[in-house]
Image (cartoon, rainbow, N blue to C red; front, side, top):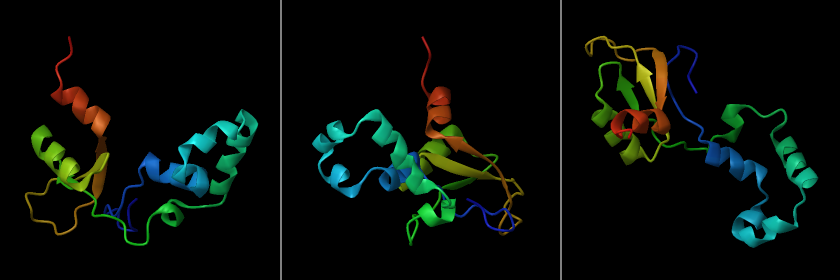
Length: 120
């Protein structure tokens, strides 16, 4: 999520979205999930109708990991691990001369791991 000036402010992980879809009593006791049929499960997504990303964010969202375009894979990994975030915002590199540089992209943990882990 970005503000009006395209500065990154928050990320909404898929797991947070699931918390709005899956009823609280099923989250508390996952064994209850088997009583839901596929049709009922499909209808659970209607709880998201009309909601914005901002509506789904916690009242006090955790700090978003933000890196500049010159960050190394290890720097990104360290920030994502520390923040327990599946995503890092990438802002325009201005050599530290711009206080709040605009968002130019994002990197997911999957994309990062594809770069860090050897493929054999």
